[in-house]
Image (tube, rainbow, N blue to C red):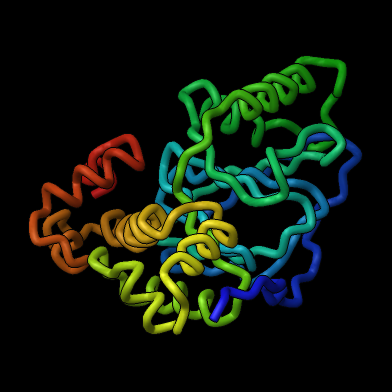
Length: 261
């Protein structure tokens, strides 16, 4: 049995836009714990920065995590839903696609430098009808330039397009296990090992081992941010030695898990 390509199911997602003629628009929102934004889309690309708490951005193609010091880019027109973890404060930047677009047509996570964080805060204080040729216009130009040079961060769990494999991936997110193997999945799906590995990389853009680590990380971040201990999260994810989980976490995120706890 081969992995068949397909098109992910796209939910009905209305456009939610605030009218503006300016190339860049910045808005700030504060959300109560566990708040969820239902499926929607924007006519502009959106950079969502979380100043406090953690937010998970879901699209038909996967899930992207935005802890502090990270931001999620969602391309213009992409349906997405957002789940807040804890009390969340966001800075959302909506950019005219003609002004700037992220690499490719998928969501991305970028690192937010101290300068970019300061610019995002300042942008939310700018009047919507700002002078493009004045100081506020220069601020927005610098902001977009900083986004352009921000490094990408691997905090993504892309979903395959084949129905059976996508269902298996979603089930894994509900009960992650870092000890699952290619043989376990290929046997359960009735797919040869080579066909599975080739198809998985083709549909997700990463190896099974890379995807598995990212999925475990996606489920760990909200729990750490809500106050659970590193040891508890590591053991629940199947790590017999919490230090092994901490090593994986720091390699992928750039900081120790205790930073988010």
